[in-house]
Length: 82
Image (cartoon, rainbow, N blue to C red; front, side, top):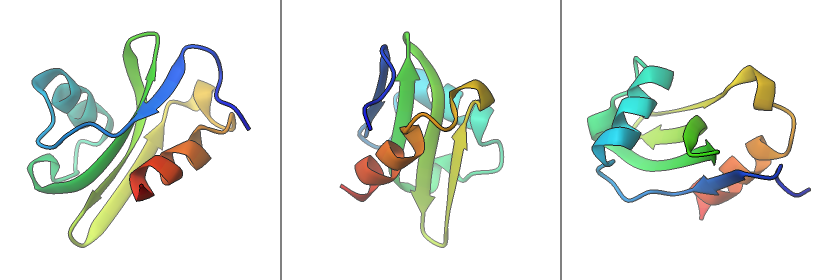
């Protein structure tokens, strides 16, 4: 399945750049952002609309409701594993 137009999934370098960190903190308020071991983020039209995070002892995923079920979940898992 291909992603919708304007949507890309990326695995940014850690630690996250300030703008990405702010978006992640907004989506994952309880995640230990400074302790991430991996992150994959979904970007649509220049805005972060979801992501998948991993840290020692945990992981979390979030996708804005209007974007769910369009193959993004599978692509997040693939990119995070990669």
